[in-house]
Image (cartoon, rainbow, N blue to C red; front, side):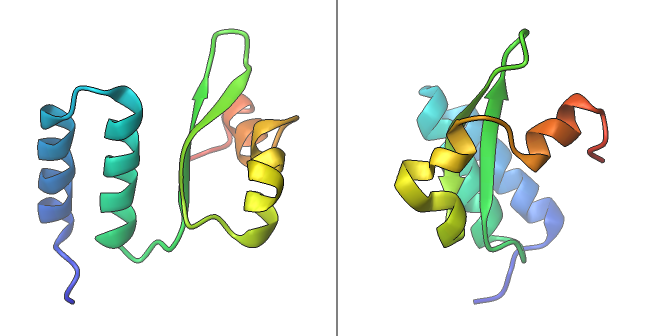
Length: 91
């Protein structure tokens, strides 16, 4: 199956976001569309609150090490991407 253009993928995700009303279902669907419509093979979304605490709210096809023990390493402590976010090192 041919991947959609970036614009078509953004349109598909935007339409899905506009139709869905439940936050977690919305995030899962948008992430799934992104993974299926791009060259990415895995993805995850964190919510990070004002105090800096993070919550894993969506994930798709995590590698074995990250999905072990019900995603323990993504949910407890800190991970590289959360640290990079706090250090404003993501671009």
